Image (tube, rainbow, N blue to C red; front, side):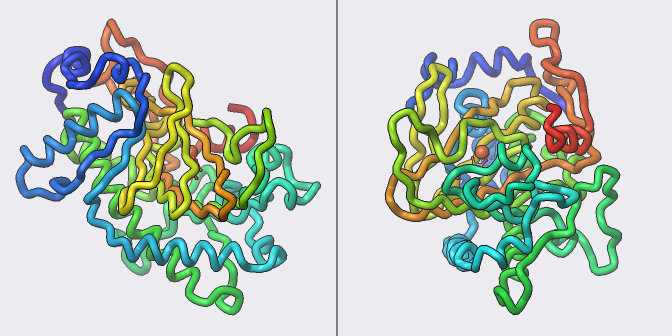
Length: 351
Ligand SMILES: O=C(O)CCC(=O)C(=O)O
Ligand SMILES: [Fe+2]
């Protein structure tokens, strides 16, 4: 792995206005990925340079010409609608509470949460928002063959996924695995572009994604009236993952906070997806890539269906500032930690 030239110099070189370099952006930039799969390394590096620019300043960007077919996303919205239209009792059969990995399964809106649910679920549940999340399975990973052993799981964070049965929603499981698999494949390619953006070998992150803890989440925001002083549907947060690829669907609602504290709306751009850098990549790059706070709010009077795909590293991966990004001027921002252990603590509410 090599980094050519001091990073501070690279950072200083980027052609963006000073206020954007300070994180005071007023819109979410768009990166054109048309050359992502070019045979020419120079072409790929040009796209990577764009990513470097936006990941070090805004931390959020749209991707267009990503090569994923619109049909994939139209189908996804349709399946999401069908899932959330199921009766409450059926959705509750996949309830995330009390499972090994409480990030997986169905999380009802706060109003419908069982009183007995653990307190951290009450914190996570939002008013007028329900969600359903799928975790990693070999079956969704094109690199795995039939008979391959399941991922090693020392932290008991992998599966099993919670599905509505074939009778309850025929075709849903198959679609979920397919969609997850397509997003996982694409995300792998994006990790390579990100490695290039950081002047690393494009395989530099491959070892972190053998059986990744990635999660595909269907989200359903019901229409709601927000009275004075009330806040967003999904509260301000940063994502804890490597990066997130978000399908906003047909209804906007995402807002991103700049470093002045202004909330910048992320409008819908046809056929574009939103990517944001998560805390894991922020730590790996020793803070060079920004994990930016955001929230979502649905004030349209319509139902909103978004689908974030959280690209996570392996639960067994050790995460910490890579030596390439640690200098005397930029000391390590945190100690290395094991990702799955950190998630476990998060679930226990102690991080
Ligand atoms: O629904 C959205 O637009 C964003 C959701 C989000 O930020 C999240 O689930 O982490
Ligand atoms: Fe998020």
